[in-house]
Length: 237
Ligand SMILES: Nc1ncnc2c1ncn2[C@@H]1O[C@H](COP(=O)(O)OP(=O)(O)OP(=O)(O)O)[C@@H](O)[C@H]1O
Image 1 (cartoon, helix red, strand yellow):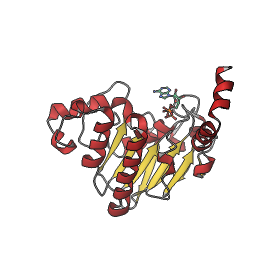
Image 2: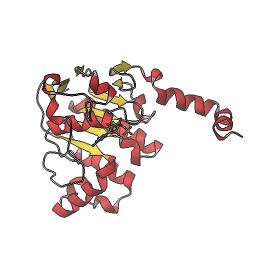
Image 3: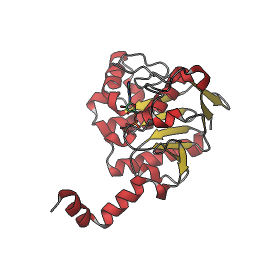
C-alpha cells in the first residue's frame, strides 16, 4: 500500500461558498486515512466522489482527463478544481498508475491509437473492442503490479459477469503485487469485494461503513426480494 492519507489544506481556502468547497463533504473535510489496498468511495450522485478522485489523480500527476503520467491529451473541463488544495502522504511514494474515467475513455482510446501504443493494451485498438472488452484489456494489460489505480465507476461498461472478472484481476494485483486501488462506484457487486474499506460520502462527513450498510446492497437486495411490490409502488400500478 502506498497512499496513506489525503488532507485538505483548509488554510489555503478563503471561502467554502463555491465549487468544489461548497460540496457538503468538502466543507467538513480535514483528512482521510486509507487503511487497505482497496478503498471504495460510495454516495449519492453529486456527493463529491469524482471531485476527490480527480484531485488525487492530479496530485499523482496523472492526466485528469484519464490515463497515466505519460498520457497527454485534452478533454474539455478536465482540470481538477481541488488538486491544488489537497496534500497526499505516501509510504513509499509510487509514480506508476492510472486514472480511469468511464466518461472520457473514448478520447483516451483515440489518444492510444494516435501514439500507436495499443500493443500495451492487448494488441488491438481499444476502438476495435467493445466498451467492456476495452476496459478489461486495460485492466489486464496496462495495470501491473506496483501502482496506484484510481477508477471512477469502472462498472460503467462491464456486465455483471465481467465485474466479477474485474474483481479477480483486482485481487490478483493487490495480493501478489502490492497495488493500491481507490474506486468510486455504484456497483453492489464491486463493493462486495471482501478486503476493501468503504467510505460513504452521503453525510456531511466522509464515514467508513460496512458493505451491508450501503444503500447499494440494501436497495438491490430489497428490490430483488420484493420486485413486484417495488414496481407496483414505483409505477403506480
Ligand atoms: N466543474 C464543476 N463546476 C461546478 N460544479 C461542479 C463541477 N463538477 C462537479 N460539480 C458539482 O459538484 C458536485 C459533486 O460532483 P461529483 O462529480 O464529484 O459527484 P459524484 O459523487 O462523483 O457523482 P456521480 O455519482 O454522479 O458521479 C455536484 O453537485 C456537481 O454538480
